[in-house]
Amino acid sequence: MSKSESGEAYSPSRMIDERIRELGDWRGELLSRIRALIRQADPDMVEEWKWRGVPVWYHGGMVCTGETYKAAVKMTFAKGAALEDPSGLFNSSLDGNTRRAIDFHEGETIDEDALKVLVRAAVALNTSR
Image (cartoon, rainbow, N blue to C red; front, side, top):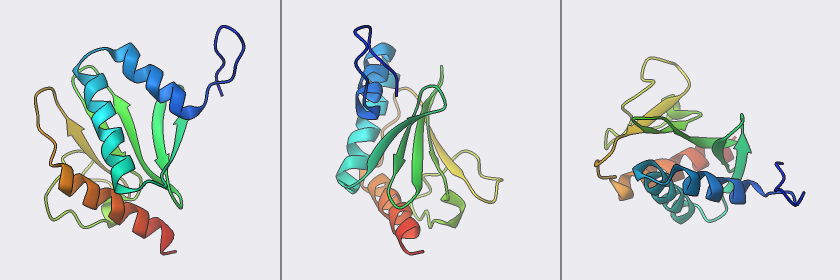
């Protein structure tokens, strides 16, 4: 856990809050919206802060990450290759046999219902084993 200037330990959720604020642009807004959708899909989701600055969501194992890049916010599903994606949200990391990702770009709209279905399916996969 990182610490503030006063030495107080930051929770993973607070670290994610700070990342969103630091971005201060469309990527922060988008990451915030994705985070809200993840929480709506599964209120029991646990937030972590990994690999020097990547928000990660867990329920029964890793569900997904929320990475930010200059031109995209990437939502990577740890076991995405095993998930049904009837709405065709996955548009990145399609050739691997484990992960699948969704790259969101500035100005794109999120199919919120389909994303929540995908998050719930990932949680169901994790908790079914």
